[in-house]
Length: 213
Image (cartoon, rainbow, N blue to C red):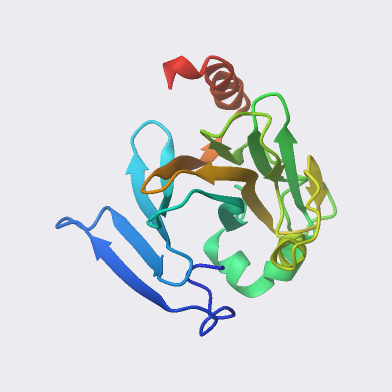
């Protein structure tokens, strides 16, 4: 089941809905799978301290427990250092400069250019980065690209990724969940932009002592 995807449309009897709050700073995407007895919700909101927050919920509306593999995350994460016009006109060129890394100890994804793309032959260091992290335990496998999505869709083995270069960034968590009847599982993925070395070191410290988050 691939919620909100056109590729899986028609395979199951589903109902999709979109909600927002009055001021418009929260969006909730919902898809109910009547055949499988599952409900998936994705809430997008903002945090003053951490940036974009994606909260996911998978609910079991059936009368029996279910065990399933889950892959959830964010695609096409842009690193700091190139403007909107550059991405619109030269997105493929920009991909060649992208470097996606994972700090295995904390599950923190770091997305940056190896150097700022430009016409000059001189390298321009990218001093800031985009970051992503999840409330899932650090030992839950993470992916920092979309390369293995089709493999997961076909039931194949998915390998954790720690460093991927020359490809668009992504942040996915991959785990196996057992959800009791009428219960649900929740997790969050957080993304922020323009983080410097000091910011990343502080965020890494917070993730290692997650009680402070």
